Length: 322
Length: 250
Image (cartoon, rainbow over all chains, first blue to last red; front, side, top):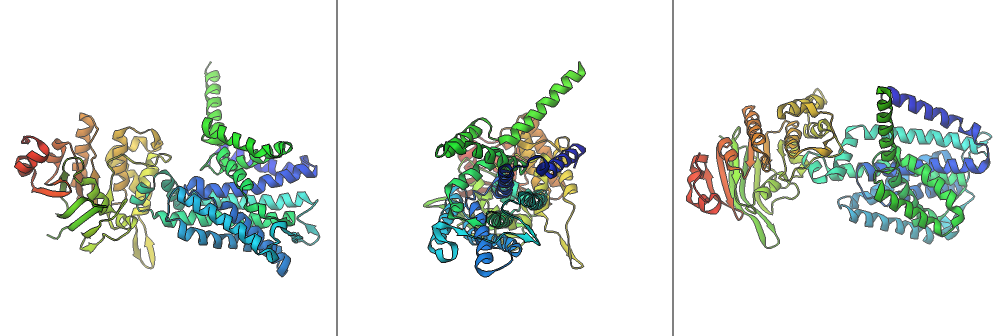
């Protein structure tokens, strides 16, 4: 890690820690919390789709499975929500294995179709098992996370924020460790050229499955966190609206960059909140943003930022010489 | 001498069409074995079925070091020691030259088990050595995305070599190159061969194929029509009629 990166990361960490001192109103803190939740979702989705090139449209299903698992276990069986966080992640891993084992021998759009279909199956199951899940009304009165008198829900947004920040940091570090390992190298080769990667000793099935499963764990954990934070989880979690918004976060931020989808999560959540008054047109506007990015900046915000920094450096060098 | 690679009655069919028909061949350790023939003769298809990328043989046996490999997965075949390049230059565009090369070293070397541990050779050293051998060490940290054709072809070879294979399958490493690049590639194949590696070479550039190979197999419509040393192949009347057009002066 070079000096510039260490300084940048330290600066970001300092800002992240000081945010609650600056942002004091509850609504803004809630939006920030949602930004961080989706930053975890988008960066993990990027691991399977952006880095490994798996057209995984079941990613929000992992989020939903984590949320419902932890919510049901805490509400109906009295299990500790803290244990529920891990069990949410574990349930997401099991789900990813259930989907991935038969699916990931397929390629390209077939994976997209199968994984999307599986998400719709889960949606139907949530509606069918309404005694357990609350059906279309959702699962409400989910117990929040709590340590002593500190409740991580409701008005106590600062506590929620710091806990979430810790989960976000652990998830992001885990992604970086994977991406920089030989496993991460295998992911990138499979995305770039699967046949060539296979000819170089990489088992496409094994590594695509690893990408799929690893990306599901923290998505399940954050789904569980989300359920305990809002104290309610609804079937919308498996719907097209959230899926398309999260997809936009990954693509607008920059596929295969980890940092990009995190930026994309903040950007799209803020844009989506800003566009809330447009009601039904909100998704249309999100679609237009996605279209514009795909056409004019396919590398996303991350790529735009990097080329901006490169140009600024050149310009500074030019003036320094003069 | 036992052959390193042996094909027994290999067929590759796509529906009713047979791209490779009942092909027998033997490749011996340390030799450069040339394969030639017109487009559609089944040369690249043969490489595909040997390496398992992207498909296996429809029937027949392929023996490598005496073991059948025709049903093995391609990643396993690579780890056994068969590395290939592709006719259409392929690489990992978002990785650097070094990373492209390192892929072969990381995933192609299963390592040796000793004292209960698996000892793997240093992938960085292997990748750097392979880049040096093909003359690309100066571009080590350059992204492969904008490579020239010559660089792409050498990079594929470097990536294959970094796995320390026992058999190297080169699919038209010279096609599309200019005169000086052709000479450099011929010299490179000779260097590789001198290091003791067995090479199978598909090539349309007859000057290269005839000067580098010790034996040549001619394919036509998926069948073997001739096999022998270059001097014999260059004068073989069936080869002349099917492929060369006129006798080739060596």
